[in-house]
Length: 119
Length: 107
Image (cartoon, rainbow over all chains, first blue to last red; front, side, top):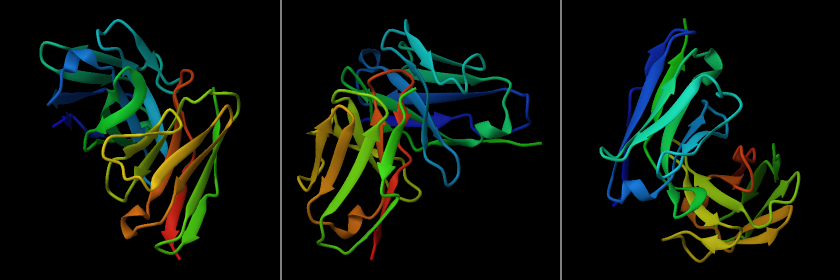
């Protein structure tokens, strides 16, 4: 079955960087777009970024554009989110997700990685 | 960006009752709407995609309808495990956006 396991979360000071990784298994990774979503404590869901199945196309939420970079390694079935210039508003649980076939709907979710930006 | 407005914010119902949740888009999104369910401490799971298609393994009591700007998620008869928060999400345009959520609570 599909498994998505995030790692790399933690506490970081404002202005610093953090890199999240997601290890995928149980499906043909190179055939699916992958997304990151996030959710601040007690708040709703927010889409963060997407990378297409082949890594060629990437889109970002305005709130993270220019600071976050999504990437993937199809040889290792991993997707990453490099987060730079972090601000307190980036504090959230970050979820790695696998699309439903061919559409930008999160069909499978990881357990989430908590990122806390605080001095 | 496309704004999704969900109503009501909270729905208080008893098991066995019918739940009707609404999601309205700020512009036409055709049928590019999904519904997710989230329980406390858990990741969301997709229930419905493209307005009316049930995701794999989703019970028949969940149904979706609508197109354009107005969409509805219906739970025909609430089971105890259905009390949760429900979000709609559009995929018509970037950025993907969500509604603010509807909490279905036990009356």
